[in-house]
Length: 330
Image 1 (spheres, rainbow, N blue to C red):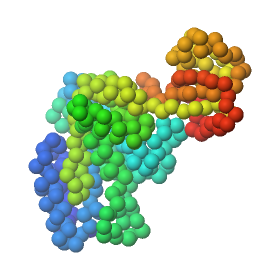
Image 2: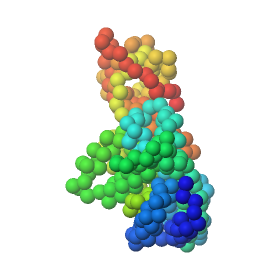
Image 3: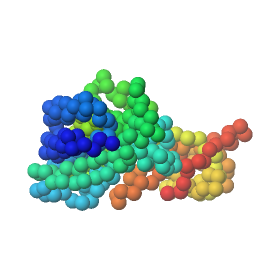
């Protein structure tokens, strides 16, 4: 471990500069990267230094140097969910169904410190996981293509997505859509929830992430930018996935959600997108194949539930073997 007095002083200076709240200045990278170069020359492992970031919250809803705890909590929770969702997408866990693997949750967990700044609140965040456990697994030094911690990769991708979505140019719409599609609907859903928190609280978020040996990445999302981001995601269906399931119709209504028994689960499903003619074809107790859109919806209290919408029904196909893993009645 790098514990000598000189390296400790260098890192303390790096922290002091970062904590000045000037997270929008690119010049800060020059000093930090220079200090990391000195550590390398002294044969010290730069990756023993912490990655870290800042979430600066400001805007008309601020009360001097203070903000409502509920508003800050909603934004912080939205950020953690988004980082974990992006990390899961990078690890090929993309569905909105089921829970995230414990390994992904552990590797993307962030620690928080809060500090006031003029007219804003700054949340200093850092990975909870030890970087060397991923960079040098079992203490083995990787000379080429050293792995990067998942928290670093997820934070970088998240900030890049935020910057590109809120400032998207017409020529960049398709590439951004494709990237979000590739990461999966859980990422789209988490970004929509984060945007909802910013829009509701009327607060602006300045986000920055600093990783050893890499330039700082930054993004700013205003309340209007957050509203646009939600519309962008919802308008392209980037927060939902379509699945085919088989179930028994337990209730049918032209007003209320239908109760559908899928496997051993009773699920409430929105049937409002079906035509009256399509509804009239079916009776309670019928076994049907359903095309269902599954999405995650955030409640006003911050809790997240799954929402099921029936897009189509058909008579059972004997060759159809649906999977109900990850379905639950919310």
